[in-house]
Structures are given as structure tokens and as C-alpha cells.
Image (tube, rainbow, N blue to C red; front, side, top):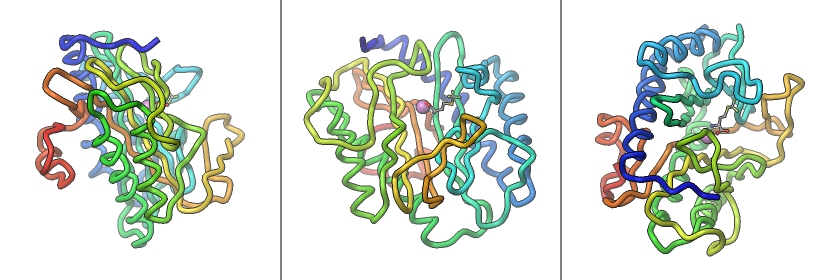
Amino acid sequence: MIIYKSEEEIQGIKRSNQIVATILSELKPMIKAGVKTRELDEYAETRAKEMDAIPAFKGYRGYPSSLCTSINEEIVHGIPSSRRLKEGDILSLDFGAIFEGFYGDAAVTYPVGAISPKAQDLIDTVEGAFYKGLKQIEEGKRLSDISHAIQGYVESRGFSVIRSFVGHGIGLSLHEEPQLPNFGLPGRGPKIKKGLVLAMEPMIAMGDWKVEILTDNWTAVTQDRSLSAHYEHTVAVTQNGTKILSLLNEEKESLSYLKENTYA
Ligand code: MF3
Ligand code: CO
């Protein structure tokens, strides 16, 4: 069952997502060669607590940390550790928070120092895919119109879409219905309507989309060990249109994707 949210509930979900967005943006300048992913996790957890929020992932189905740190061929759910970042890596950070009972969830892929043009293209493509999907969110369209737009864009740029992980409804818990695949035929699934709140999270790979789970039982990597990138925002269909709840004001201004639209 999809839980459609009131405008008040959407405001609550936004507050939680603004905490997530603040933490992800504060982590950005910390991403440098030599930094241990565990240090990023500790920072995220401390900042969440300072803002009276609870990290949403820690303890979720036994996940051991507050932040997910997925490096290079790691797609998602990488566990922070004493591993140090090195120049040329790409790092996905995924963070979730609970504030006053509402959930926020967002992810971004950052470069570590100078990266290859192809790796930068992968990062740009996963962000672009999110915005292609976002454009499909209009009352009357169906859920899989989002999936189809994401897949079309990613494949047109020569990359592949990860199949085993999906976006999801969010708000009163971390994972609610509906599931939102990042591939598929258009025109399927529930109609998009006011009150729908989704965590849209394309994950893509440079090579094949097949996935392997490492022996820690969490870290998902590409089977062919090609680079992977992830980008996620929580978005809501409100009475004033579609809004990205996990974007900060200063980020909105710098994003060319948002220039012709009013999603923020
Ligand atoms: N954004 C991811 C998701 O929605 C992160 C979940 S991490 C977990 O699945 F530990 F909570 F599973
Ligand atoms: Co998510």
C-alpha cells in the first residue's frame, strides 16, 4: 500500500532531508586522498546527533554504520572502514536520517582529487539520469515512466543500469511502497499523484549491470568490477508541484538542471 502524505507530513519529511543534505554537503570538502571512510561515517553520525536526528541506516537489517561509503566498483552499501581514499577514486556517499519521526534519504558520488574523464562522465550521467526521471513526475503519468526515462538516458550515454536495487517510497519509514526500478517499459504501475514521496536513486555502471555481494553480506559490487555511481534524492509531489526535499538552497542555485524548472 502506498502511503500518500499530507502537506504537513511533506514538511516534516523535508526537515529530515535537509539534515541529510547538510551532512552530505559538509562531507564533500572532507573527500581527499588519505582519508579513512570510517572518519566520514563518524562525522556524519556526530553531526546527525548534533541536529537531534537519528542515523536511519545504523541497525537497519543489521547494517553496522550510519553512512554507506561505496568506492569505485562498489555500487551501494559499502561499509565504512579503515580503508583510505586515494587520488582518482570515485566515492558514493549514502546517508539517511530520522527527525521527529520522518525519514530522509539521499546519495551522491564525489571524485577523490583528479579522476579520469570517463569516470566524470559516469558521475554526470547518474545525476542527469535522476533529473530525466524527475521530469516524468507529473500527475497522470505512471511510475514506470520514471524508470523508462532513466534507463533510456543512461544507455544512450553508453552505460548500464543496475537492476537489483530500486528507488522506493519513503517518509514514515525508510522503505515504503512503491518500489521504483531504474529500468523498464513506460506506462506501468500506479499513477503519479499528490502526496507521493519517493527516494529516486539511479545506480549505474561503466560495464555490465550484473551485481555481486561481498562476503561482508552488504557491499554490492559490479561483477565485472567496472566503476559504478549512485545519485539519490527524496522528492515529493505537492500541491505546488514536484519538489526535491533533499536539496539545500545554495545547491538549487548552482544546478543547471533546475534552471528551466521549479522542482526546488
Ligand atoms: N539508500 C539506500 C537504500 O535506500 C541505503 C540503505 S542502507 C541500509 O536502500 F543500510 F539501510 F540498508
Ligand atoms: Co534509498
